[in-house]
Image (spheres, rainbow, N blue to C red):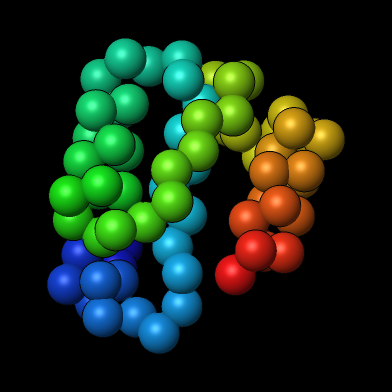
Length: 68
């Protein structure tokens, strides 16, 4: 786990991704992105393992990387 202060100081953009399946994690992800890190925020519907959604996750990552 990387401490928030180190991520905030990182010289690269940060993307916070969640799967939208667990209501308790969405506010935490929102707060990390908006209040703590100034990061981009993305919800890829598909549960806990968003990387297993295939194209939805891959397309979202490609879009993020192409804009940073």
